[in-house]
Each structure stands twice: as C-alpha cells, then as structure tokens.
Image (cartoon, rainbow over all chains, first blue to last red; front, side, top):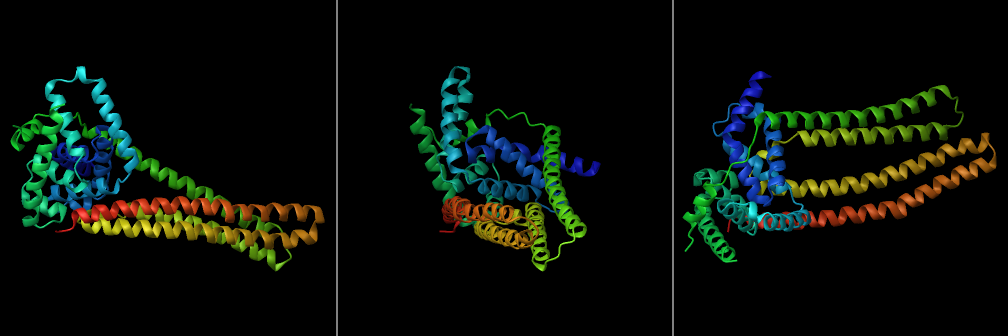
Length: 165
Length: 198
C-alpha cells in the first residue's frame, strides 16, 4: 500500500498541473476543472496496477483525462457556469493583476473553441511533443499538424478580438 | 499584434493552482468508501427484503399455488434489482475503455448510453408488470381467507398503483430518459465528428 501511495504521489506530482490545465481549458471553470482532475486521478489510482510497467505513463493519464472530460457532457450546466465565470471575472476585476486577467481572458477564449480544439491546444500550450498529442488524441501526426495550425490561428484571433474590449 | 507566442507566454506565466496530492488522495479514498458504503447499504436493504420474504414464505402456511408463485415473483424482482445494482457497480469499476482513443471512447459512450436507455426503460416495464402480477396472484388467497371488503380494497389499491406506474410514472420516466439519450447522442456525434480524421 505504501508503494502504491508513493507511486501515485510521484505520478500526481509529475502530471497534476498539466491535467488541471487540460480540464480547465476544456471546462473554462476552475472548480469544475478541479473536480475533473480529481476524477481523472481517482481512475488513475484505481488502475495503478495496470500502469506499473507502462513506458509512457503520462500518455495514459492524458487519455484518461481526455476521456473523463469527454464524458462530462453537461452542456446546460457548462453554459451557466460560463456566464457565472464571466460575472465573477467582471466583479472581481479589481482584484486581478494584469497577468491574471490575461490568463482568465485566455481561458475564456479557449472555452469558445470546439471541444477537441480545446483539448489539443492546452496540450500544445503545455508543450507536449506532437507525437504524444497524436497518440493521446488518436489523430495522425500529419492531420494533427494541420489542425494545430488552424487552432492557433483561431485562438490568436479570438484573443485579439476580446482583448480590445 | 498578438501572435501565438505571446499567448504561450501568458499561458506559461499563469499561477499554478495549489494542488496537494495528500488532500486529493484523502478525498479519493473518501469518495471510494462512500461509493462502497452506498452499494453496501443497497445490498443490505435488498437482502433484508429477500430475507423477510423468505421468512414469511417459510413461516406462514400458504395454501394456494398462486401465493407461492407471487412470492417467487417478488423474490425474483428483488434479486433482479440486486443484480442490476451489482452489475452497474462492476461496470463503473471496469474502466478498461478509459484507455481507448477518444474516437473509440465516444463510440463506447454512445453504446453505453443506448444500453442504459434500453435497460432502464425495459427494466422498469418488466419490474412494474411482474410486481403487479405478483400482487394479483397474492390477493387470490387473501380473497378466500379474508372479507370481501378487505380483498376489494387491497386489490383496488394494487390495481390503481399498477395503472399509475404504467400509464403515468413510466411514461414520464421514459420521456425523460429519451430526451436525455437524444441530447447525449447529439453531443457525442458532434464530438465524434470533431475527432474524425478529415
């Protein structure tokens, strides 16, 4: 049990930040992202024995995180939360430093992308190698490069558009 | 001009959330125990029902075959619920599909949602019909051993309950499940298109 705890802690330490980013990028809501991240790590914990001998453990964890996000299809709730997040961001604008505001705006722009685009771009922003993103998303590397190029353009345009306001 | 590198810089400058692995581990163990306790409670309650039925069956000298058949039906219904709960629990914990690619996972989710709809609606129908049948059979013996008034009242309430379940509760439930399924399928198809290779 101690070994399992230890192994889990190592895995958590190495992957939690990126998984949180992925979940936050997907949901656009920090609380929900926390829930999804915990759900992901719960599944990792339950399947830890299967991962012991896996070479690319982070790929499997990302897959679990992506699939956990995909199965979280509560559209109405998400929209409400999006509005709420916007309200909170507006009300607490004074508390935000410029840097935090930019990050919040970036997450709001990511939330406006399609679901698969959100997943891919958060991995790109966290500098995962393209080969690993292709492996996680099940998209061929050639196609992925084209997709990433398009998503980058889309996100940049969205950010520029919203930054003006 | 904001190009993607600027966006990347903003992303990398974000403050990381305070994530404590101990806290997450503790919360996970708690939620796992909660799930196990809930299942245990359901199993205990159902087992209690089955034990109670068995006890009544053994202790009360029922004379008619219809009563024995009705008790058998009640017990089968209880066992069916117990089995459905256990298999749902096993399904939650059998998470091999989590490691699939998103495309495969979406297909499995779609299949799972359709199966869930079929199981829930059919299960409800079968459960209502069999419980109703069991009640009707049970009242045959009551009719012979008690007053007509008691039999009529008991039978009336049972029939009213079956009608309510079948014509109102079940239809409402099926409508709700159907709209949930349609929404899920629509969303999953949209996701499936997004992950398809163009």
